[in-house]
Image (cartoon, rainbow, N blue to C red; front, side, top):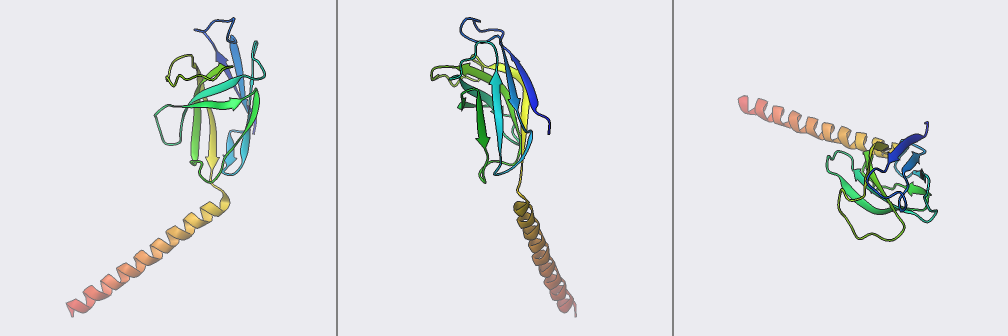
Length: 157
């Protein structure tokens, strides 16, 4: 997969304390749970020790949430595991800072971006377990329907 490039434009912040533009590169836009992806920020005036908060949407949600201190430093690996929701994750805004910020406001100092997306897919064994469970439910339901039909047939006699 080609890297995902997102350019962030800072319009309301002072150029002396915040970069004018930021680039966010996510090296993969489609991963299997248990894998990780690399996120890299670059831009004029970014310090190597910068911390990044993100505004994001989880899979199957329209609600924007904030993840404070999502990434320390310009480049970091972001792992997924069995507890990571499957589906499309969207990063909709970024806030860069050096010091810990206590502000959880959805809007303050976040740079809105075109959503950066990472899709988390289930591992192959998860698909097999799901299919096996569905097959079991169909078989059980089939047995239940067959018993019901036999019962109704016997009562009709």
